[in-house]
Every structure is written in structure tokens, then in C-alpha cells.
Image (cartoon, rainbow, N blue to C red; front, side, top):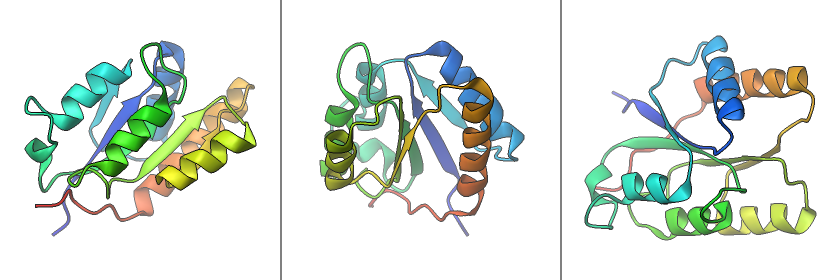
Length: 146
């Protein structure tokens, strides 16, 4: 039996967040999506009240992460997730407007699984998210460490 995967979406642009969720749904993915508009709230949820992440032992997460957030960088969030024993196996998909090659390299070095530059054109962006949703429907996600 597989553990249901919860999608954690960390995206500060409300329009992008709606577009992402709508097009993931259009691709047939019905998993729970928990949206966060800043890094602070997302990390509070992921790490729990004791700050260890143990609250999510055995749960499976897939994390969609924007790098440009109002309160901290997505790089900092990625680093904290990948350094945590309970969360480090969660796939992280960086979905951002930044296409700087050094930043892309840094994200992969820190453990991001997929780096996608958001297309500027609305239709291209919507299509990219639908394809990402199809990808989500076939990948296997391990549960957090017990």
C-alpha cells in the first residue's frame, strides 16, 4: 500500500499559485495541495511545533518551491528540507522565474530533484504545469523516515 502524497506548494504569487493548482488538477492529479505564500509558514508546518519534522514521520510530501519569496530565499528552504532526517527524501521541484545557471547548479547541489523555469507566456506556463501534473501522477514518492 502506498502512502498518499501531499503536495506542499510554496509560492508567494497568488496568481501563479492558482494557475499551478488549476493545471495540476486538469492533468488528473487529485492529491491534497497545501499552499503557503511564504517560507516562514511553510517551514513551521513542515518542521512542526518542536522544529524537528518528526510530526510528519511516515507521511509522503512532494514540494513545489518558488525561490523568490518575501521572507526568505527558496535556497534556504531547500537546504533546511534536505538537511532534515524526516524530510530529506521528499522530492523538491523548484518552480521559479530565475534561469541563472549558477542558481540552477546550486539548487541541484543542495538536492532539488527538478528545476523548472516558469515560462513568461500564460499558455506556455499553463501547459508546463499540466505536464508537471502528468509527471506527478507517475512518480513514486517515499514516506518520511520513521
